[in-house]
Length: 82
Length: 481
Image 1 (tube, each protein chain N blue to C red):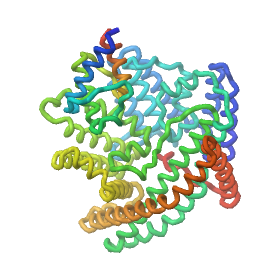
Image 2: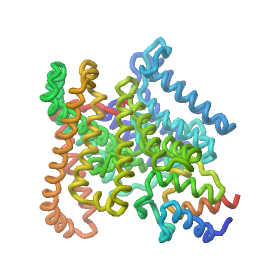
Image 3: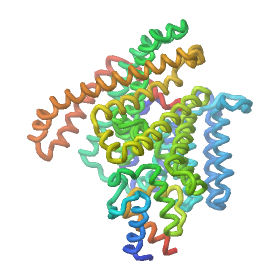
Image 4: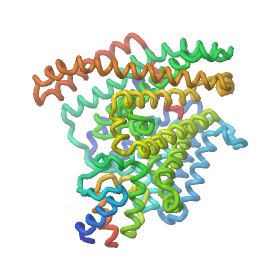
C-alpha cells in the first residue's frame, strides 16, 4: 500500500490548489463543514483534481461518499497501490 | 394498506417480532419477504393480474443487475431499457403515443423500485457491491416500510442491517421508536387534518377570482393556498416518515432521515439537503455528480466549473421535478425547480465575486438577509408547487402577464409573512428557552430519557384521543408519485 503520509502530503497540495488557499492543513476528520467553499460544485472540482494527481478513476459511489479527508486518503492509498 | 389502518399496525408488530426474534439470517429474510408480500399484495384490488407489471419490472431490474455484473459495458443500454419501461408503465402523458396495457394495474411503489434498481445497477457495474441474491434483492426493493415512498436507503446500509444478528432491544430504544411513530400519527391525524380543512376555502376563492381574471384580489388567496399546501405536504410526508422510521427503530433497523427542519433552510439550494433528503442524495450521487464530472472533464479547462455547476443543477432539478408526475404540469414544476436552483447558484457566484468572499459571508450572516433568504426560498417552493394543484382551467390563464403578476405578488406576500413569522418565533424562543433549559438541567443526564418518556406518553394520549374523535386518516400524498 502507498505510504499514507505521502498521499496526505499530495492531497494537501490538491486542496490548496482547488480552494486557492495555501494555508489549508488537511486532517483526517476534516469534512466539507470545515471549509466554507467546499460545496457540491467544488467537491467535483476536487474529485477531478484528485483523479488527475493520483491517476485514478473514482466511481459514482466513491465520489458520493468522499466527504471525509481520512476516508479519501485511505481510498487513494488503496487505489494508487493497485 | 393504509398506514393508519389496524392491518398496518398488526403487520408492523408481526415484522418487529420476527426481526427481533429470528437469529438465522435466511429465516429473517424469508419472514421479511412474507411480510413484504402481504403489504404489497394489499394494494391489489379486483384481480392479482394488477400486480403483474410490478412483478415484471422487478424481474427486468434483477436481470439488468445480473447483466451489468457480467458485462459492465451494458450499463447504458440497460439503464435506457429500465427507465423506458418505467416511463411506459407510468404512462407519461408528456410522451405522445405510448402503447397501453389492456388492463388496470398497480403503479404504487414503482418510482422507488426504479431508484433502487438503478442504484444497484450502477454500483454493481462499478464493482462497488456484488449482485444480491433474489431473496435479498426482493426484500430491498419491496421492503414494506419504504416501498410506498422511501426513504431511499442505500443497498449497502439496508443489507448490512439485514445480515447482522438482531440487536437486543433496550427500553430507551423502544420508547424512542414508539414516540417517533406516535409523533408521526399526531402529524397526520391531527395537524394534517387541521390543515386540509383550511385549504378549500382559499383554493376556491383563488379559483373564483382566477376564472374571472381578477388577478389582484386572487393573489392573497393564491399565497395562502400555496403556503398551506406546502405545509400539508410537509406535515403529511414528514408524518409518514416519522411512522416508518419509528417502526424501523422498534424492529432494530435504522432508516435514513428524509427531513431536517426544511423551514430552517438558508436558501433554495440548501432546501434540498433538508427536504426529501434521500431523494436529493440519490440524484446527487447518480445524476448531478456524474454529469458535472463529465462536463468538467470535457469543458473544465475552458469553462469555469462554477458555471458548469449551474447547468448541472438545472438539469438535475428539472429531471427531479419531472419525476414527480406524468403530466405537463410536472414538466413546468421541474423547470421551475431548475430555474430556482440555477438563479440561487448564480446569485452566490456573482455576489461572492462582487463583494468578495468574506463580505458575502458576512452578508449571509446578517439576520435581515438570512430571514429574507429563508423566506424567499420557501415562498418560491410554494409557488413552484402550484403546478401540482391548479385545476386545468386557470393554468394557461395564469401564464398571462397579469396571471404572472399575481404569482409574483403571492411570492412577495409569502416572503413578507415568512420574515414576520421568523421574527415572532425568535422572540418567542428567547422568552421560552431559559426557563425550559433550567427545568431540563435539574434532571442532569436523565433529561434525554425523561423527555423521551414524557413525549411518548403525551403523544400516545393525543393519538388515541384523535383516533376516537376523528376516524379516517389522510392518505399518503407521496404515494401518488
